[in-house]
Image 1 (cartoon, rainbow, N blue to C red):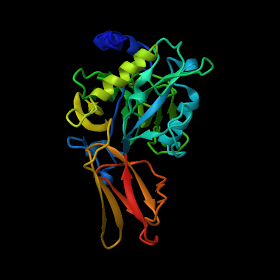
Image 2 (image 1 turned 135 degrees about the horizontal axis):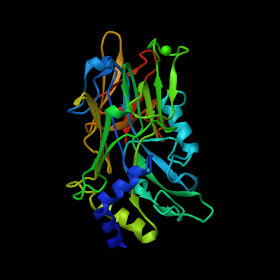
Image 3 (image 1 turned 180 degrees about the vertical axis):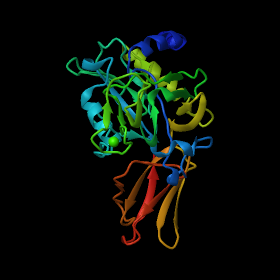
Length: 344
Ligand SMILES: [Ca+2]
């Protein structure tokens, strides 16, 4: 079975072609990013956005997407709906990694990478399930949101996924396909004013159609498993690289091209083990207090607070998306004394 898994890696290129024909979201991941110009403090080394794009927001996260029996070649609607709701700013993320919840992950786990390609074996998070369970495994995906005053098009984007293992097992490079129910564009119309009657929402159409906003649940990457031995092989492969000398990390880069030139690039990282070198700092100036996580470049962290440190400490997650290493998060100066911590 280990052999089968290795064979899958070797056949990766062949599988890619097949997957790309499957329209959606099937195997790879992505990433992207621009950033609001005025908040452009976060980003990894090498990230940049051409100011001429007039980007309002550009974010990319990692999540776990289900591979439901009913939607093997599209995106399962009970997950897609909350995912788009979050990306469009209409609802908060879910509280846990579950088939019908959109949850941002900030650290990897081999269980997130186990999908059942045949669509016949019930599994979820690396475990075989009863025959009544409709899930056929899951993938790690890279949802993104982009808004820009200057129109752009889906065809401008290229997503590149890499993994740090010797085989670069999860590598994938893909130009995103047409607009779709899971790749939603909003064009501000001839008046180029957001929210007026001529705005057009695109859930279909060729990738060259212009938009000002893009919400994509993200391409997914995973290893294929048809039985327990295959699941074990994925676990062993990922965890065998999960050492101080060879941490298994997936990165997703999103490139935006115009006239053949890269005008923006963002890279986000998802490590598969804890990063012991991160720290949290609090700073203030005349108007504001803020916290900042100093950690792995390109990685997100959840921020938590507690009123005191008396056991048992009651840490509460802040109701915001996780913050990127190097990014400052404002704190209400008028709040009572609190303690903060960051976690993966
Ligand atoms: Ca308009």
